[in-house]
Each structure stands twice: as C-alpha cells, then as structure tokens.
Image (cartoon, rainbow, N blue to C red; front, side):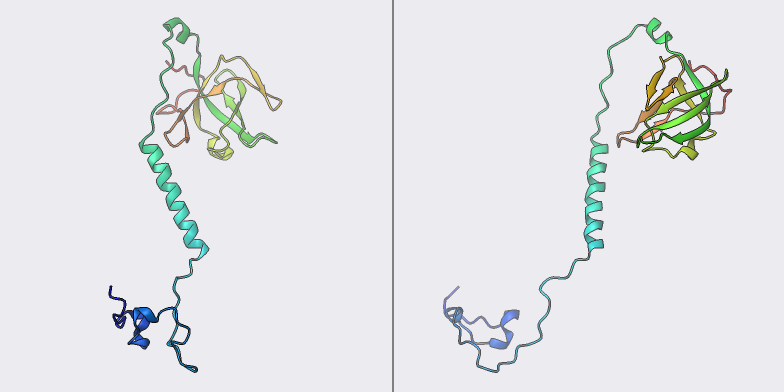
Length: 184
C-alpha cells in the first residue's frame, strides 16, 4: 500500500475522508468539538447460558467420540468348563431396594432367590434408583462367598453389562421366569 494513499471507503473512517496513512498517530486529526458518529458494540455480550450450552455441546461430542472409538476390554484367559460349572447363576426377583447409608454408590437389594430371601449389595446407585428395581428380575451369582460392604453382608453379585459410555445395564431374562431359575 502506498504511504500516501487515501483510506476513504473503509467503514471505520467514513467521517474522515481524506486521511492519509502517514496521518495516523497524530493527535490533532479531529478539531475540537467534533461530533463522533453513533458507536456500536465491537463484540456481542455472551450470556452464561450460551457458554454452558457450548461447553455441554463439546462434552457431548467428546463422549460420542469416546463411544465411537471404544475398544472392548480384552477377553480374559481361557478357563476350563469345570471352572465355569462352579458358577451358580440364577434369576432373582427384587423385593426391596434402598440406598446404603453413608455410601454414594451402593444399593442394598433384597432378592427372592426361589429358596428364600437374600441380601445383595451392589455399586449401582449412580445408574439406578432403588424404586426402579423393585419387582425386576435380575441375574446374579448365587454361590459367591459372602462379603461385608459397609457393614452389610452381601450374599451374591448382580450381573451387569457395561456400555461403551460406562453405563451399567442389568442382565435380565427376556421373559419372566420363576425366582431361582438357573442360567445355563
């Protein structure tokens, strides 16, 4: 650009036609009392809601990409059939369910196992509300050694599948079966 070329025509200098490049930096360009034109905002104000929406959009995209690129956990070492036969997998009906006090992740389930009632403590409170499980039939390991969790003896383990997004989904029979039915 020529140092002496006119800058007229550029929107920010419309009221000052005739300025030359060498004039910039001078302090006496405008006469005293000169009226400035209407001033507009350079940037639009961004509301918190718009920022939060964009952040959520980024998080959703990140999660979708993680799900899309998810690789299953490698298969564990091969076991012999007699080892599998040791597992007693059954279907039980949830009779009652409650959050375990002072434990964010744990639910205490009372399960009708066909023989009686057993208590199973499971770390699923993030994925299920207690009232949503009552009446459902779930698959569980019946012969797992009891274990105390937060002072409650857990007498088995509920089976869940984990989605690519980390969500747990209960393993359930396709149709209602008798409580205590074996899974084969």
